[in-house]
Length: 535
Image (cartoon, rainbow, N blue to C red; front, side, top):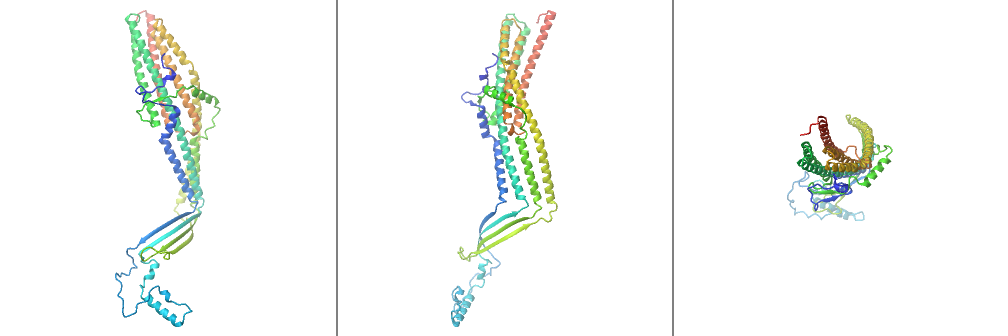
């Protein structure tokens, strides 16, 4: 009669082409939004960051082993004697024997003469060599220097600082995982609200367009009756005003629908110009029955301490306790074991041989005791204590807000359930009443006022039923996601404000129709009192 059936009311915007329209259900919309959401990607990055901080804190308990290697080329040295050419060879003396010079040193089994001759050869061998050549093995002025080594360190005692830092990192990891879960739940709720807001906007557009068609039909009937003289000019003016007043309502409803679809596309990361068609009905019987069963099974509020925001506040307390322990641990001495092992070579030319490397190996046990820090440790401890008390106060405050939010959510579900049950059958009765009023007006046994009153009641009944279905679906989803939802839900607030705006616009339309109806009743009362016919 006045509106399209429920199965065909959810359609895409009028400017969409069926060949390019993409049908999408609520479950598909939720999956698509979760795969494309920037907020979830940010939350996952937070989890990865927290995991890295866990590795950083855990590494302080384990030994540290590092390897190093380097090559140094000396271009100029203070040990350079400055000679650029080799000294002239004295031909009057015999040439010194070849190196190595220690080969001429004989043992005790040789004769005395042999040993003296060996000492003379070793002396002449040594005098014939560069006197600074022995410094090459010590690195003084060496042209080439090779270093290879290992360094080892192990913390033995830190006054509880390492354990506290691990506690802080673990609390940060828990908080990041809770945040990821909360963002997923918030996205599901936002998509559900945006989806059903778009479905509700479709219903309101269909209702406004159907009302416009009916007012135009009444206007044509009134014009025809005025032509034959069956109705007064006042009735014709009323029909013209009613038809003209319905057009701005249609335009407003279409604009609201466009905004609702843009909001949904933005959450799904769809191009804003691409058309979509909603396939999930706002008053789906299975979903509404499940919501009614959920509302009937509610007993009391026990979810406050399990809310995501409350659990994050508890993790923040653990983190602040760990930071307080870190601040207190600065007063204790630290003990660490370190070791350095290295190989060093100073070849005169080219690459070093296997026998050119010398070994350096040290082991140290070191401690560090804070004697005077100018009050820095005391200041760090005071800051940590204040942060811990603030975190505890925020936990209590958040738990109170979570309890209140849980109660409000349960109340919204109960209210939506009662509103839905109250709307059952009302739309059908209003549609039947409008059909009777239309027949009575067409047969001339009722006035246009009665027809407009029936139309307004039908509009109100259909809007109430569609709005109750939307609120029931959203309240059911919110209660199911309540443990993981954050307290601050900007997307939900915007969607609720949009739904309230649509309801307010519909109420304004109803009030306008009621005012017109009251004016007509007053005119008819004056006519019956004075007996003067309308002009």
